[in-house]
Length: 259
Image 1 (cartoon, rainbow, N blue to C red):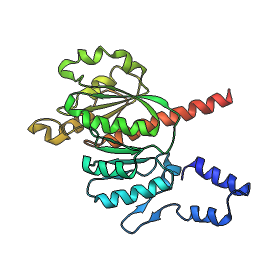
Image 2: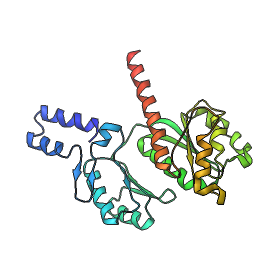
Image 3: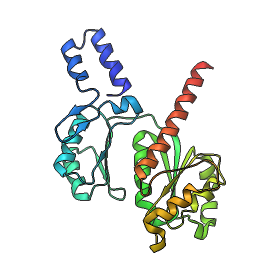
Image 4: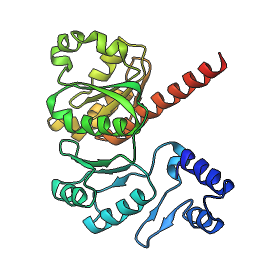
């Protein structure tokens, strides 16, 4: 249940198109629907602007499918993270209009057309960082953001990144995914006024400590405007980028109405 759906429900009731019983039936599922093994938060989109997302790791296919059915039945966008292709195939069979994004290990289904807003640029230091970066890109895209990608432009050859300076300057938010020492986030933040969401990845050799070195490097960035999410948390990075864009878009629209 998002704000638009709730307003429509109330308008239909006021106009006599929906009965009191139907309204009560819908509202009973707020703020969540208890299905035994899970409590599906149908109210989350109304509160935060983004619906509940299914974290697939550790869940059975049957649990994922049942939660997905409840989300779709309530007209929410569906996003399932951290799943293998076999689970993606089962979701595709249940929701033929959805899509399994293999390099992000995500399944998504849009509840309807969305207005596209903002420009999120997703940057990676190396090709090995792409799967986590794609998780961020897919998340921001489902939210409604325009997303561009700039991959394999790490500090070992920083001229590759500088060759695309215009993309960086035009972005509203930049997600930088990097493993190893995680330096790329600081480099990008040093040449742009856009907020940078630093996304440490577990890519690297022994002393990278499965992403801890990149995480600490990003947290200790001397560049301004850098926020940091957890190791390999592409979903979280995509959410942060999308929320920044959504808030900026709302403010711009509100200002436009006042002018």
